[in-house]
Image 1 (spheres, helix red, strand yellow):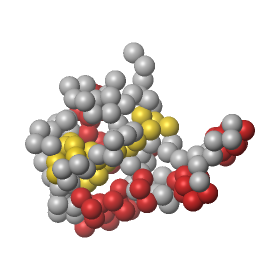
Image 2 (image 1 turned 45 degrees about the vertical axis):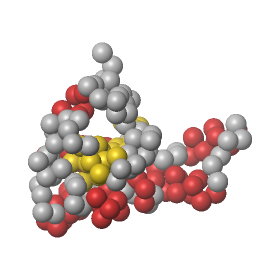
Image 3 (image 1 turned 30 degrees about the vertical axis):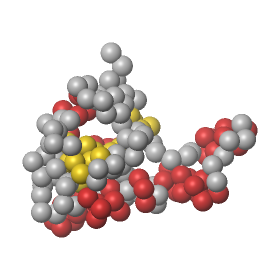
Image 4 (image 1 turned 180 degrees about the horizontal axis):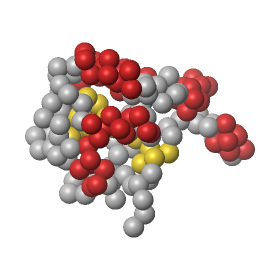
Length: 160
């Protein structure tokens, strides 16, 4: 079975050149943001600890390890077993590209949980106070009633 890996989100210099060669670059602003996102440093333990102190809920330890090791990214396995959910990308703790940054998106979701990932359809996966993972459906502006995973580790195990 193929091991789960995470590609850094954004555009590397090599990818920019590749896209340029094929003449399929995004608009200038998006290109700039995606390059900045790729250049974002990994999260620091102190940043995450400071953020956790501001929250009214704990953060799953497995998720903290994931942020420190990967700081988000595009999973090699993106479908969640037992649901119709497909993960486009896991959010970085912080990123120069606001739409990929947990701390920038948190204010939009703070009543429901911590945003941890996005789907291609524009929905958001949330780590709720009960440490379960829920899908926030952007069409109805609410979370789905049933969790898609019982923990962050469970979510990673369900990816195929």
